[in-house]
Image (cartoon, rainbow, N blue to C red):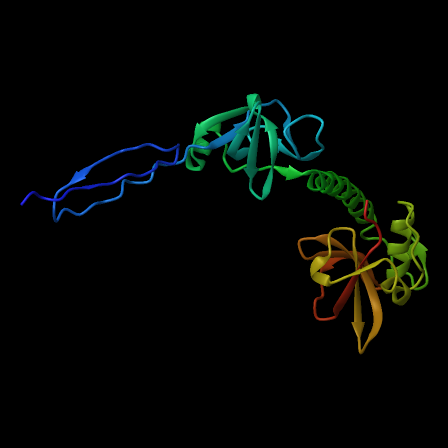
Length: 254
């Protein structure tokens, strides 16, 4: 009796390919190994590549792919490619993409140390704002640190002749056009309330006991604060006293 034979077909990831194999009776058919998708790409531009809502410059820009930023090409529509980069998808002009490699090959191909992905326009604005805030924060901290060693005076607001804890931070902020209430308890209820863990350099942190605020300090980073401490030690830098640090306040956003 003639052996029955079976004919198998399969598709590759790059398109339909009719590939046949005759199997004898009792032979076991093994599917071919899945080909590696080489749909990785990066932005071959000097600055950044606009990612648009549709295939054409008339469509609004959703996000941007930075120079050498990684994406995967999902499909091509004429001169435009629909891409995905991290969680952002949209259309870019195909001529500005270098394609034909895997995600694993990306760092070697581009000589990058880490992955670079697209970012939304809102993310870009947030980064710019954060840089601006960071510069202002550092200015405030640097200004405050100039007065370390000067005296503590209860009820005082002078950065040179003496200030108490709330007078010290009030006078520091005043130099930057920010108006604070006079006493620490009122300062704690002003501005944007934040947790101690959220504090960034330039933010205020309040100490309280039994629900009553008794001291205010300025956070300067790395677990340190600057404050008008006492008549014995004056204006000084200390470790953040976390046992009594109950809340923080932020008085500037940009």
